[in-house]
Length: 273
Figure 1 (cartoon, rainbow, N blue to C red):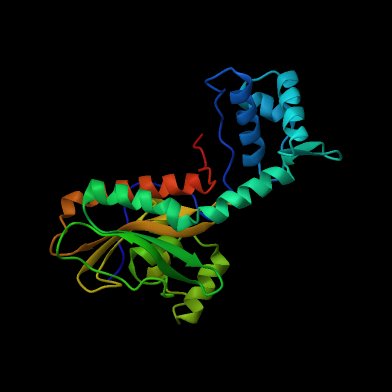
Figure 2 (tube, one colour):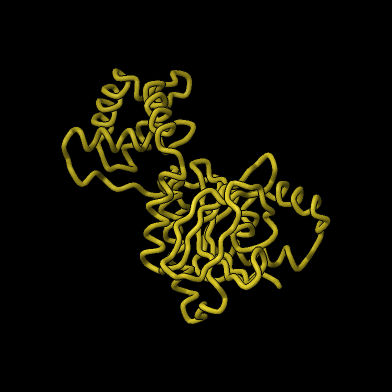
């Protein structure tokens, strides 16, 4: 059965464009320093004083002074040739400590709990395995219903079946999609290509009985800081309990929480003009 997708849009396979930043609500030195550090961290390969000044609405002299403060603490480094500013070694050291102590699953579980509290259906986090071009169900929170479906956790599974997989597959770079399809003997399948295009356009996927017979899946993609899809987040619902009238609500919640998790991983969604 072909996968159906609808609702909120998202952009795939490209670096997230820097959207307009707001001037710090607090005009104090700490708030402005944090805003400057955030601007440098989100710039990727580096940024200049005039760009930070324009984005934050701060005088260039103020930005220069705050960057000097951050450089003294090793939080920012200056590339003399560019000249641009990028995150410093001390910032990277602290980031690594935090990341090692708070793995993705730990960040995601509170969001899965929110999903279940809101919709009372079992919510899952899937992670993409780049080397294998497959996925694994990494974490889940169960609903209070006595009837439900469970999937095998921490086992590599195909991206081709279910909203959990296709919401990832649709946002992979074309060469990776082609590698997956070729391995499965589905290269050139026009109907599948159209299906993935629809998932990309709508921003999430819905499937009926693809991965588990009698189960409905509604999942949205999760993106990392570099703009690459890293997994998916969503619901698995027994078809006999599924109310089509609630599909949009499930999709909205999956997209909302997937976007929140993506933001927590450093992803900045492309801003519409």
